[in-house]
Image (tube, rainbow, N blue to C red; front, side):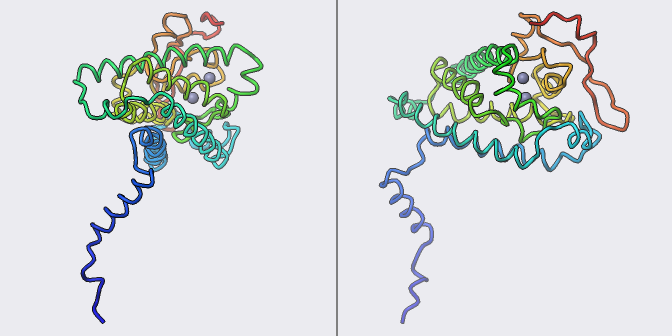
Length: 284
Ligand SMILES: [Zn+2]
Ligand SMILES: [Zn+2]
């Protein structure tokens, strides 16, 4: 008996297996990657923050407050996010299928940096505009707040993997529809969309991470950041800082911007504090 294993090249095996996989229609298209990469990115990036969560000197709230103030368990949050991501994946595959008529052409051509930058910027502005008005309306309409958006606000002390802890309908209305609009209006290719939606996912996770770490580039480049969104999650900040996830533009224009300072917290860490009496700020 010959040792047949010696002549089998594991690489060619896996290539053949992948080929077979592709023939069966299971190749990883940009549409599929655009759907699933952001989900993997979400858990990977928030996983890093879970590991860093013990850095008391950089937290915006104590670990103890996280346990006391939050109205939902971590386990329920994980389940809620997974459910949400499942719904979003289904809808996004349908959307990509319906809208993706020239995928092949768009993946072959290489758009210039200027085109990519303008598509990213357009996508960011579209998502921001859509989410500001939907988000603000969800706070304004008591029925929608009570039955849908209040789920996200069970996290008074946000943490990274709670970023997408939303009612499935909210995920659909704010994230999926907002994402679809930004994709369609910006004219980005499904390949660009993989990067764009991964970036938007990282930004949203970062806004909920609850840590003010030195050197965080999101804190340097965006005024809409972890501290800004933390204010919105506080009971006093509920009618302010609706803008998400990129710019503070709409809050500024429509008078819902809450100015705050970041101060050292007693016992270590930081705290976002409003700089003026919040009741005197105009709100809806
Ligand atoms: Zn809210
Ligand atoms: Zn939030």
